[in-house]
Image (cartoon, rainbow, N blue to C red):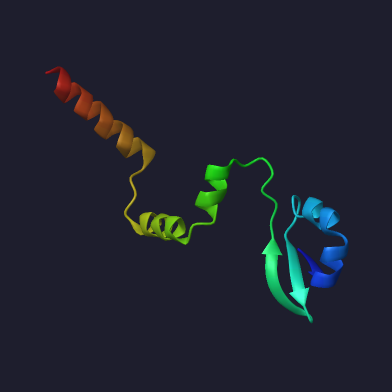
Length: 87
C-alpha cells in the first residue's frame, strides 16, 4: 500500500490513479489517513456498486455463517430428486 499526502496526490493525480490499479493508495492529511483509492479498472459499474454496498457484504457474511452442504452431498440429493421426478 502506498501512502501519499493529499498535496502530493493533487500534484500527481494521474500517476496515483494509475498506481491504484496495482495497489491501494492511502491519501493522508497532516500524516493521518483520510481515504484509500483503489483501482477498479476492468470492473463494470454494477460490480463496483455491489462491491461498495455495505448491505451486500452483510448478506455475504450472513450466508457464510449458515450451514453448508458438501458438493458430494448436493450431487447425491440432486440425483435422488431427479430419480423421484422420473417415477
